[in-house]
Length: 205
Image (cartoon, rainbow, N blue to C red):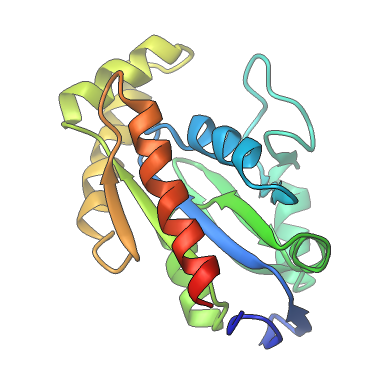
């Protein structure tokens, strides 16, 4: 793979990338988790990189599975100590990629999948970290609104904020390697398309 053995220097960290990092992004409610979970079953030896957040766990969330959960003060302390390759403040909470955790994941797995917001993806670009980036588009904002409402646990104010952010994210996603519409009821088709893109990339590199 031409991406193997890429030396990275950022946030006072230097490490060697042996695996392919695949970033899956979408607006809130866009289907990132479902896509990643399905891809993990299709690619032998693949792993999911779990990012870190200051957001409180939602019902059913598990530490180390959905996110690594920290308090805001703990997150800020890690920022000050240079422990994040990239981080982002989104909808009132911090989200970030811890260098040590990513180093370990890429050393142990040939394919590492992760969900990162658009600003986080752009921060990876700035840090010079090679990755394959896929953005999941909703059919429309109305469909996205319905998905978020069905998931529950979101106030009207939060919902409006997330939809406003979604518009900005979609507009800023033009530099992704590919953008795929994750149509309602057609998740299997979305997964098939992304799996093909990943397979072709691995074969050609």
